[in-house]
Image 1 (cartoon, rainbow, N blue to C red):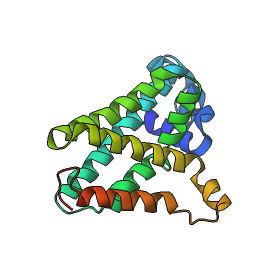
Image 2 (cartoon, rainbow, N blue to C red):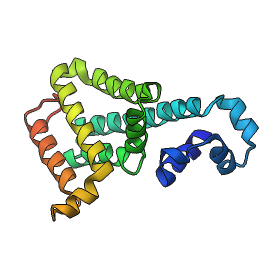
Image 3 (tube, one colour):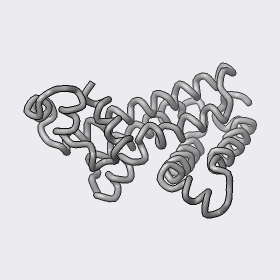
Length: 182
């Protein structure tokens, strides 16, 4: 409940809006209660990163599994990654953690991405999957941070990054990089 409230605050107000006091107000608890539970704002941010990372990576894992049984398109897989970073708030949290050099907050996000790569590594080329994951996450992160503004500046459709990701994923699926079939 508190972590979901923190995630919503992050999406609505950015990282600076995720304070113990704001979370307490959102869940109708006292500041002291939330302080007792998390300890510090840094601890809250670290737990939020773990919470968000596990949800993001579970969504990605589910999409790849759905693709394996023919229930998801390359666009579905790409959109889940892009949505997690955009609407899900992972870009805001990741960029804030990276720019503030708060590696403790960034580590759960990176660990979760590694876990998805490791989950599928026995079934495919682990290095290739790591490179693909690296590229897809960076595309999604960049798109969430400034995709709208860049699309406008270049007079491109807002969906350009997602469209490129879709065509790239489709090619990788056709080449059976993931060993899951096209």
